[in-house]
Amino acid sequence: MNKEWRSRVRGILAVCGFCTMALLMYSGLGECAPAAKPKPGGNLTVGMELEFRGFDPLKAQYTGIADRTVLMAVEERLFDTDTKGNLVPELALSAKPSKNGKNWTIALRKGVKFHDGTPFNADAVVGHWQRLLDPNNKFFALSTLEPIESVQKVDDFTVRFNLKHPWAVFKNVLSAPQSFTAFIPSPKAVKDDTHNRAPVGTGPYMFKEWLPNDRLTVVRNPDYWRKGKGYLDSVVFRPMPDMQSRFASLQSGEIDAIQTDRGASIIQARDDRSLRVYSSYGAGPYNFLFNVSKPPLSDARVRQALAHAWNQELLIKADYKGTLPFAKDPYGGMIGCSDSAYREYDPAKARKLLAEYGKPVILEMNHTNTPRGKEAGEIMQRLFKEVGVTLTLNTVTEAQLGKRGITGDYQITGWKLRDYDDMGGILRSNLLSTSKLNFSKYQNHRMDELLTIQQMSTDRKVREKALCGVASLINEDAVFLYGGGRRFHVIAKAGVKGIDNVRHGVIRVSDAWLEKVK
Image (cartoon, rainbow, N blue to C red; front, side, top):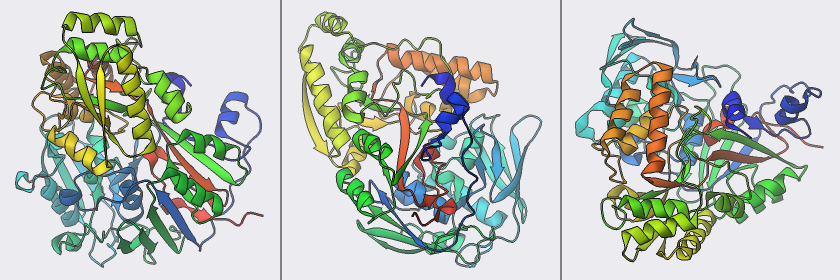
């Protein structure tokens, strides 16, 4: 599947039994049967890979895919986006920029209440944003919000965002489910310091209980402002780190839907008439981060040699069974770069660069204790050995991997870039020399220039040229290795309906309903 196709679909490809979108797009044969009317009632159980981090932005710091799925059920954003990137009203009604693009006036929806009875209004929105922007609160992703100067209340149902300069990524900030910034929590729950473990929002489902490492349960909100939405009586989210157990529980009927990236399970599910596979492409690839602050990885020749020793295609085939796309840049087809200077697998070039370096290269890699982490580590170890590099593998938990990456306690670590539709903001925070989120410690004046150009401009062509320059520098300097592009997969029982939209890996239980399968 090429970049042009991925760009057209913007990440949504649902496999719906024998009448797939892919079949329709390619052959034009027939149409899917008319959608059945959603039926209220029933309980849905969803298997997640990891335990939840929490739901208070200042405490949980960032969201994983499991957290996103719960947040989308309990809390809401000012806007969603459609597949073309247009804002779709949710808790807000409209967003109007000023002529100079530095001020955005947001009209809010009236008559909405949080689950605890607190009214949703401008105070709730402004309070949320001021808390994030206050430097004393040390919000983990504060540096990504640097262009926001202030957020102010205009009246009870109008707020204004004041920017330091026009900012193309601002729509992401208002709508992206990957970040805490978009979700508006109950001011009372935040003030009472209960929100992290018992989130309160305005969504179709209300938090009921969280039993750590067992389950998190939400129940239907009877007073939801979108009348008739929220079809299920309850949803149980179960963290199940072992993929084989998760898939076996789906097959046995113990759970109804799972998130997964295991290629063998995805392929098996496609041939199982009792199951449905829903997939979506995204930007933000899996990658292996280099800590460039210390030798030998501070020498570009060593990093470049490792890039030529690395065989991404082998990883995708062996670890993911071909269910991930090949990545040469961070954009997943959202923009097209004619030449990203990607360093192809070439052991001879790797050996030549290592010979120029002239010293033994002995490295350590941190990887997760998941099947994908272990398999990736073993493949990398073998490939590096073939060019004379010794690689020791350190197996850690997902939490330990994140902590060590953030604190710089690594040489090579498994990682992944956040999967935003517009990657400009996240790349700036990850690669700018002065950014606190630049965990690789990479510094390059030209990179800083390109990141600033795309940050300050709202011209699409100017930004794309700069972002393609960023991609080329990543590959030329071998800042990190690509571990495959991003493609999310959800497998569900055939009777689970309404979850075909799995953009950014989110299972949108707010749209889910159950149908009895004969």
